[in-house]
Length: 315
Image 1: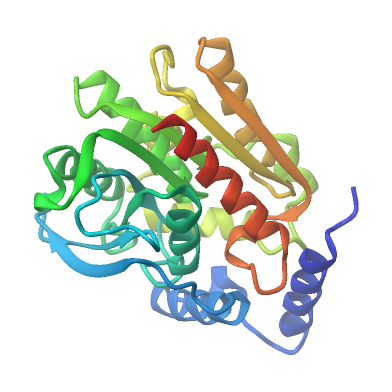
Image 2: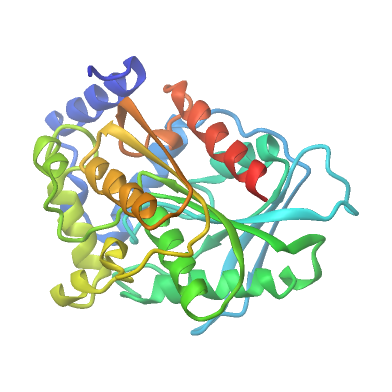
């Protein structure tokens, strides 16, 4: 299928920038990549929708405090006890933060009518695998313990995330099952990274020219993993988890012009084979990262709302 017009504009703008001498992300330092990513997201993000509450604070983590951002939907009162979704942002476990996905979280909260805690987990190369996993699971346990006294229902929890954040959502969900941890009612997975080996057909078909490239994926892994052997660890490549039975229902969204397309579908198939209730949607004309490009891609809001409504129905 051909590219969606908005996605085509993004791809062509990125190609033009490279032709004019912009450095590819895999040739940048982590600090440069983070600044570039946040600038690009800001340019592709509409005005932020008003929500009922936004609160930034820190929670105790395994190696220091973890910054989080708490959202309550527009129209909710301070006394309303709401379901809560833990949101883990994308960015290859190296880039992205609370601001890069602020629009996504605000729209999800308003559409779904639930609270959100967005987690600014530690990232590579400063903090390699499994630091991000540990922070995300710590945040989940904090939420299940009452979220610091906030008016949420700790029995009505969901997790969601895009790309690397989808990966971390999967891993925290499996950890919760295996350690008799918090009960998660639903997982919302947006073009999740599930296999660090990158051997699927879509990694060949979309190796370059569609924003996320094979070279950039290699770079992200080099920053995140402590050794090549980590690729075989299910906490890095969750499709390698031996048993997916007993996991909560899920929705998996992929993009048709994305190196991660096939591994996202493969994980959805494994969930289904394990008896997990899973819905799947591929936005055929889209590119990796499209949910953070709502200023130029109208299907961004469609996908965000699809995730939010699926969570709303489950929690």
